[in-house]
Structures are given as C-alpha cells and as structure tokens.
Length: 156
Image 1 (cartoon, rainbow, N blue to C red):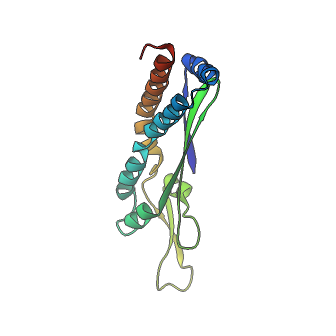
Image 2 (cartoon, rainbow, N blue to C red):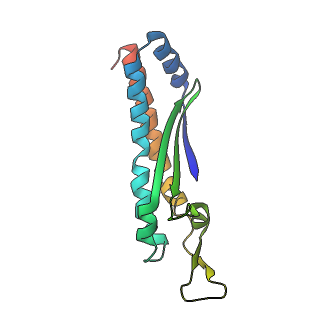
Image 3 (cartoon, rainbow, N blue to C red):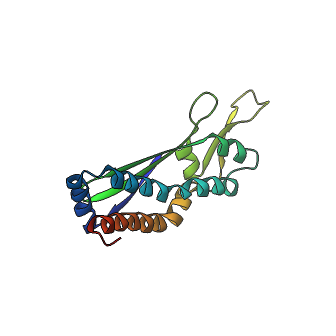
C-alpha cells in the first residue's frame, strides 16, 4: 500500500534547472533530505492510529510489523514524496489495504470447520493520518523548495 504527496510550484522548475546548471549537489541533497523529513511524522501518526482501530490483542502485533519506504523524486514541474506502507506477517504480508477498508481476517483457534472469520474494525487506519497530515507535509515541502530557491538566488 502506498500513497504520494505531491508539491507543485512555479519555483520548482526554476530551482531544478538552476541546481543542474550550478552542479551543486549539496543543495540538491539538502532539498532531498528536507523533502524526506517532511514525510517522517506520518510514521508516528499511523502507529498511533492502530490502537484506536484494531482489537487490543492485534494492535501491538500490527504496530511492530509495519514497514515504511520513502522516496523523493523531483521533476521539472513537481516534487513527489512517495511513502509506501506495508506490514510483514510471519509467513506473508498482512493485508493492510483490507485493514484500511475496515476488515480484519483472522483464524479462530480451536475451530476446525471454517477457522477463518472476518471481523469489522474501524476503517481508515492509514487514510485518517494521511488526511490529517497531508496539508502540513505539503507546507513543509513548499518551505524546503522555497529555502533552496532562496539559497540559489542569494536571498538566503
């Protein structure tokens, strides 16, 4: 499961061109680090959301199994921070999209016939933190792009 947070800015195309012309890899790395840092609070928010949505016995198991991958891509017209979220089980990945839709499928121990059941849980375990933090992440990403633009033009 993954999602993208995009920032589009008129300055970004100019910043990207200027960084290429300057050949300044330090500012480019600084911009990438700043864009990655903007998305980091989402990890904590998703982990905080899990106990609110999952049964008490499953919440710690799911929290420990969460894995995050973050990637930054800057193009001519926009900057993208892609954050992918998945949860590793003992034998395979947990069905995080189904949990996000509000469905937890689990075995009932001691049951021989039809041991698997579906349990309703609170939907949006990943979507709610994204909705709450997306405006702040975009604001921080724009601030990073503005800072790098100011450094290039000598205003910073």
